[in-house]
Length: 73
Ligand SMILES: [Zn+2]
Image (tube, rainbow, N blue to C red):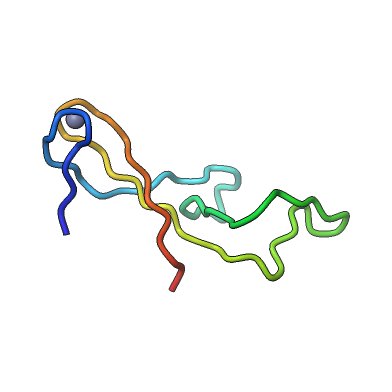
């Protein structure tokens, strides 16, 4: 599957935005459906929400970033 840049129509390469919060627990950014809810115990409430991995494509010519939310496997 190849993506074209919506700005300059050059090829885009696949990648992801890394969440750099904790060096021991690095993962890609996650997109969560719905509004952010904070929980007293857990920080952010995720129970029952749809979670998606965020894939980000980078244009090799102009550097434009384009993100897609894809279902977690
Ligand atoms: Zn471009």
